[in-house]
Image (cartoon, rainbow, N blue to C red; front, side):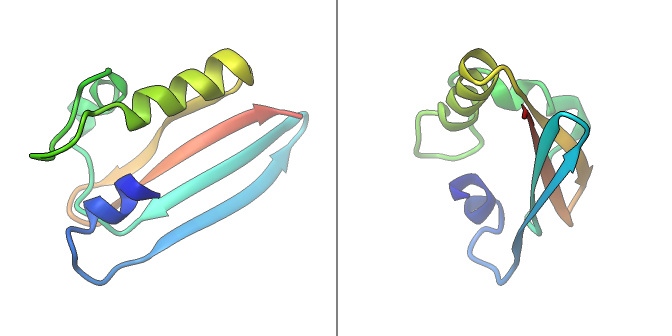
Length: 95
């Protein structure tokens, strides 16, 4: 949520959550209308210390990924990105 808010850079925007189930998996999509993420950086954004902000530690996404994947045996990744329009992150969890 915090990253989605920051991506909107103070401009009006939306954050949407979509929940679904596919077989034995629960899927959560988090979509914002922020500035988007360059496709070349999709994996980089999960690296500890990576940040585009002047202030901050760059630990939010790396910690989230670790919790979801190591403790819940799920998956967190950038599902879609539309430069200048927004980003969707997907969380997949086993039922």
